[in-house]
Length: 586
Image (cartoon, rainbow, N blue to C red):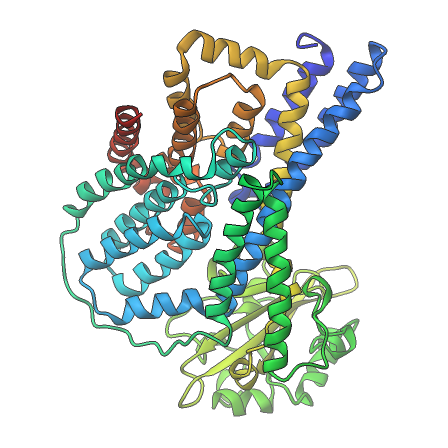
């Protein structure tokens, strides 16, 4: 079937869909969508190819095997992500950040401490969460030292990817290898020293490139873990232990052990709810805790003209203002005057809507929503602080702390929406502001279903598309051809080293799943080698891992693809050193 029309169509569809994945940040199309579409088309081709030969059962049985593999991965990751989100909600990671920022380390001290923490946290937490946490520390301490921030971000990416390589929980690829039974749980720790070499070699070289070793002034942040945080950490460790025991002693899928642990977290969350005085409330299904449309601050403005919205806004008890399509302020109500201390007469007709909230000129939320491509700007100026508003198209909600509002600062919730005429042409925008400082102080409510809903569903659905795409192409025989041409011709070691380098360009998930589907009959040390190379190969390029992509967005303009590429030879030295170390040990 490899030479059939259906087979060639399957390859074409997969290549087109996967070419859109690296462009996600530029075209703003989530990576899961094209890959899921490709998966559906490829299995249509597989079914038609088998049906043409009179086989009505093979395609059905094959896709069920793929779905079973995906179900195990989905349930495992859903449980792990929920635990990580729960620990984040209980301020565990924020406390670590505040502790390090307040210690007053020198720049080199921050460089090494963030790298070391990324290396040792990523085997338990995912490398994306780890990288974002350490990156926030680096940017808080680094200030205007762009070179230090860039080098530290590279160090964090390399350390997070390396740390995830020696643990079944550290990366999706290691999890797949463990669940497939190619490497036992404790055998992964043989990769500890090679992973350490992968991080230390480039880190030592980059350490000497930090010119200034100043000691920044410590920033004191009063962050405390919320009730139940320590118990949740214990439950997470027990859940990992349960997953290992299910696999090693009961011969059950690790995902079943993780879901058992998730159930324990759910029961404990009920105790947290009782402790916080919310025994009369149910957890909302999948976190669907949203205001009804009739209670939304934008609801009174639905279907109204630009002029009518202006009249309603003047009578609103909530601070609000309007701008026209030239970004000039046309309304500034009394509640807005009380909040900001700025009179309407002082700002009407100006473009100074940013002044009460920011130290330097930048777009306000209302400026962004009247842009033709608000999705391209909202992440740049409000990364991690916004969500799409479901009530009005192209509208957003943003929550942030503003120290300049009042003597002690305030937590404000901004809601902004474009105003259009009957023909859909933008006339301006309205922005409503709510003071949520008191709600923020009381935000101790833990909702297990909301934590479940905050799992990275785009990534989970991306895995679905990848597993079914690769499984479908395997039915055409292409993976057997690749396995023969690579492993039989080049040998296991060279082929695994090349596969690791490929993962710097192509996401390591489909790469590893392809290797597992090929099942080239490698010994244990070679399965460990390909686990190491696919886990750390993504560090060679900034786009090679989720950690790198996330930090490029967070440290926009400072840590860039070009900066990372400049240090790629140094990172490659660590990559080769880890391979040599593994071969020497094994």
